[in-house]
Length: 302
Image: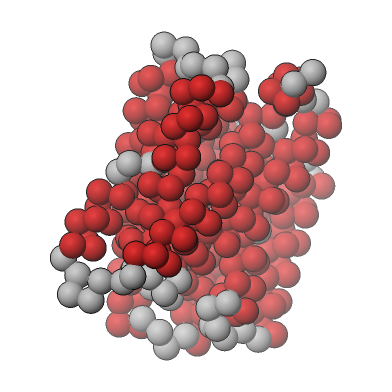
């Protein structure tokens, strides 16, 4: 049995639910690393452009020669995904340009799953138990508590924090939109890897054009070498992170996967402290523990 057949055989089974949980948690860790990579020392627009062109080019041989070709009805679905993800990435880059990572990232990741759970209830007829909604409340209290605490204590980017927070909420809405839309798309095609390969190929060529436009207008242009290396690294992380969460939504519950992925806020706080040298402390650690506890309650209450 091939990998595709094995994954499809897991759909709707207890083993599939366990595999989906593992994939969602792996996506959480990788997504936090991806966010930090985009927020690092380079301009977020340039970082995103370098990452996207790398995974777009890497996807071409996979899409054309490895996976099965998409069914005809998939082309409009890919067009919709392209538009939603482009809007999301523009909003995300603007958010990272204006706000400290430890403040805006939790807001993005907190609003995203709340919207996603509500939309998944309509689109996929998924229902959370009362215990699971309690877990969502615990997780969101930790996420937004972390954002509020960081807002009070961090001095970086304070003059642009209000528009940054508004953009973070908007970006969270786009997270919910692409999570549910892409879950619908990957379930529509027979082979989930067809969706992933063709999605990455199409998705890789919008942000590089914006990044090139910004790069050519910069007075002090960064060395393209480190930027391109970041792009290749980010491309591999994007493949694993996005691929994991999409496969989780194919074989498991969309709402649960969306919530579990937001434990990425815990990993983001650790990355912000260890790599980006942003401050931490016992209060922040307590709030991160709330996020983890909420995810556990959601999983066990299902």
